[in-house]
Amino acid sequence: MPDITMYHGWVNYPTWLVYTAITDDRYLREVLYEKAERSNTVEELAREIEDEITDLPYDYDWSFRSFLWDLLQYALNEVSWLDIARHIWQEVYDDGEEVE
Image 1 (cartoon, rainbow, N blue to C red):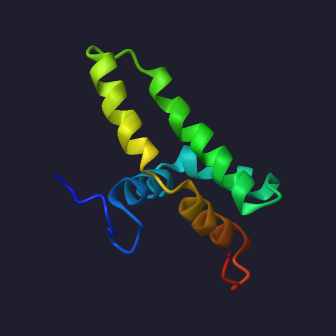
Image 2 (image 1 turned 120 degrees about the horizontal axis):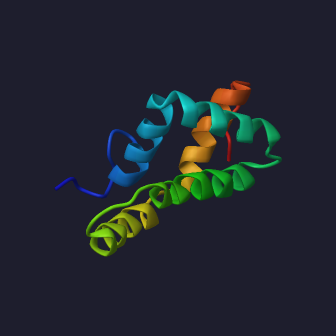
């Protein structure tokens, strides 16, 4: 089981995994980059990213849904949405300035 603290320079494994999934999936990347362009702040973008990702499981009809949902919710609650938003914000705006 992966350690949920510091992973590949990210705050934890779930945060790294969500960011990796976003950047590896063309559709998600485009959707979230568009949201970054429309967002006024990194915090607003973080909320948009969290909403987009946490709505994904509703698209699936899983057996053992309750068990998997509980496990998924635990992992998603560990994600630092603000860290992901900061990275996407900088990728979209690429102004060279560090986002606080």
